[in-house]
Image (cartoon, one colour):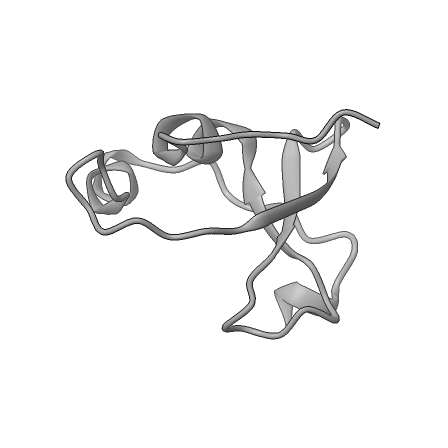
Length: 75
């Protein structure tokens, strides 16, 4: 299973995958970014509706293409 395999790499998205990503007209949704893996350019995030114990992963270009409203807290 990809979620529990630290060696799994998310495939580079093709045109069909990119076309399925939400755009600025889609309903709003919130995720919490909890980390970043620079060697894989993956963002680690949790979803309140999908459990918060194991972070999910997405490629950085997907986040860049789908994150329309973002904010962060300064330490």
